[in-house]
Image: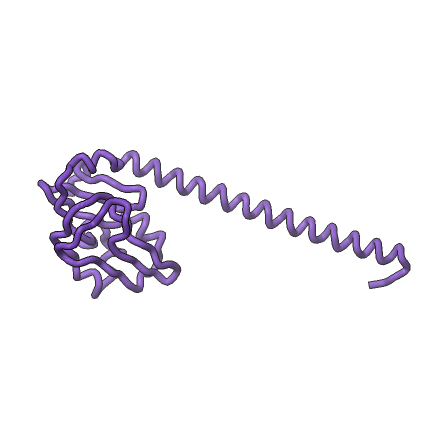
Length: 166
């Protein structure tokens, strides 16, 4: 696939334009984040998808996730092979792992999507936020442990000063 024609959405879709039809799939980053896939629910040919609205679901061992449409249009083809073999989606999400093909009327929709460099920066920012959130959780956990030990020591001292033993 030519990288020039590929766009990306905030919901980790990749979109490739060929004439008036776009192919939509999920990124390798998203497939990796989901982990082991167990189910996929895709729409039917001739259904309409609306930008920002769920058009299907993907389920992994860890989570059930809505597939959010990156643009609006009419579905002209669905990759039914994926339902039988989800490993295709995990091994090759950018080629044989595509999800749906959609005919779009307004090519201006593509302008709202990210190019490869923008998507890479977006991914890095997500990783940075996750890493920072992990650090904050660790700090809170350590503080709770320290506070718990202090309270336990205070109770012990108070009990000893009252002549009690624990």
